[in-house]
Image (cartoon, rainbow, N blue to C red; front, side, top):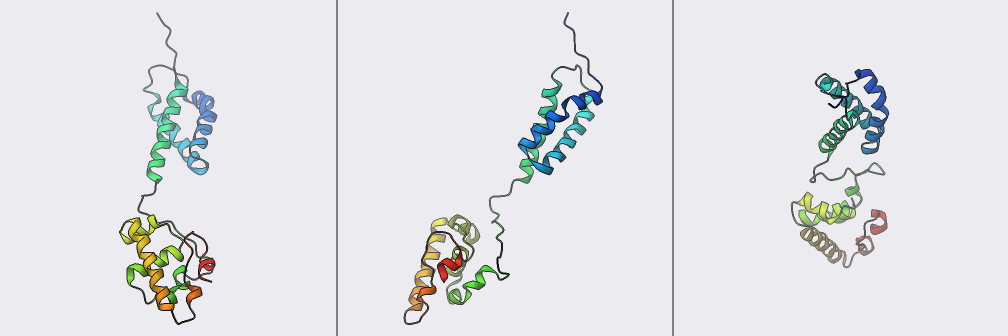
Length: 176
């Protein structure tokens, strides 16, 4: 007959496994999230501790609890695909204000694509989400807006201010 390992007191179990669990969670989650998950892991373990039938594989058991908590936390914190990134404003003025004098006469879709591309440096994928279109349509709208601005600038001294660069960068590099 095999000897069944007895379940140690919870305090001893906690002391033996706390460092391993905290290290595991810090690697998976980092910072404050790991501290919160650590506390929740041992709260869940405490709630289930009196139902344990034997004391074998306690380390694996508590690490399973921690791993599932880490997965649940990351699922809850995952941003949705339709959220656009929050962009900082460097000089206190909205980025579109830097080119509004150029884009004011454009049709709404071209103006939006142009401003999102050259004022906010968004990718065509992000512009497509904002416009509710495909990345190709967003690229076409921005291109049409640039062409329309160039044709409007004929005869005026605005030609140097119209965006020509296709690579993301600072708006001052493209509009100056």
